[in-house]
Image 1 (cartoon, rainbow, N blue to C red):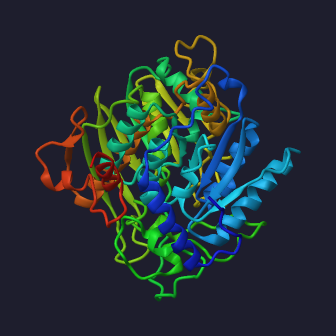
Image 2 (cartoon, rainbow, N blue to C red; image 1 turned 30 degrees about the horizontal axis):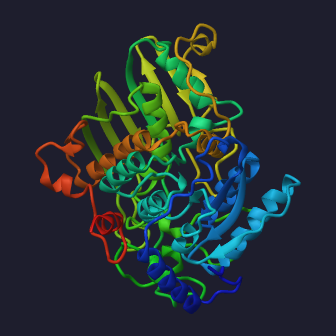
Image 3 (cartoon, rainbow, N blue to C red; image 1 turned 60 degrees about the horizontal axis):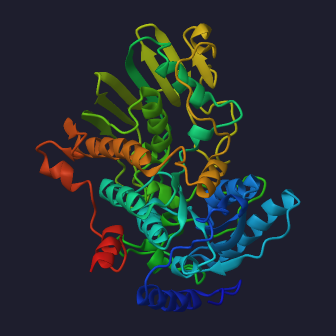
Length: 475
């Protein structure tokens, strides 16, 4: 199928969308076999990037290119300007390695990219409300997936995606890159020390997160000719366009880096920092607690929600969770950004502070005098004599690509990522309802609470949506 030209209009995008939809539905999905044979380790992974915005350009494209394990052969975005920018960014990263300039096809519809049999794997770097459907489509097209966090927008989508990974046997890595945080590896080291009993009996965990700012609603604007806005909305409600709802239209300033997009502040597309950075910190907390496949049993929270129609994600918040073993977790914007494990023999703290931020546009955090890896007594951090040794990985994309080739499980697979994302989502529900909730970890339902259980999923606007996609496959 012919790739879109660099200067696509919105009409061109809509036209190719229709063609791709017809072709995608016409026949069975074909699983690429090039990486599944006995000679698979000798092959380079052929990757397509879906989503060419801030986190893709600053993080995912860089990670894949730097690995030396992959060839990038395609980029895709619903904004034609960002498709061109994404292609240029990939070429820039390969040039920095003195690698040959890659031949990259450009697409305005993900279904065209997934239809290519020569693509083995994809990165998905889109707004949260598109994560589940894109990942499901990629899995059933036979592609391995690197999926930006949070894993899904809703708990129900997480169940569908976790089940699809098990059914298809594909490799899925969620972007909880604190598991691969090098070179200091403070998150892994903290978790090893806690799980080795350095703090004694673990009694409490504190998670500090920032908040995203809000501002008054802007006026409605015309939809840019380069953006397929109708498809960008996907399963969410049809609403008027404003740039603050989506992403900046001006090119990124090389000196400042990519700007933080507006969709991160709107609840139809993101739940706010409770999932934005919460997905990272809850994952690290579960890792250190040795409860990666479990979750809280009781949640109580409160949060401030602005009355704005556009930037309406939570502001200040305070959440209390109870985990098996009577471990009490507190999550608040008033705490130091990071994770603190507290036991009856001391505490261990880990954070990204004083290390390179994930992107230049990360939100401001509460200043702290604590070190990236700190403890009530430095002896608690002595690497000698640890009884638990967790997997080492200094780069999350490289870990994923190595697993694509070996077929081993990556550091942040679907079952683990679903549980940490679930803890974030049930915390958000508790903030919304403002009353205590009891959670059945095994059944993955609130106990005797229809109102709370109804919030585990969301209505989907057709023809989009993860549940609709799965239902369509069964029909």
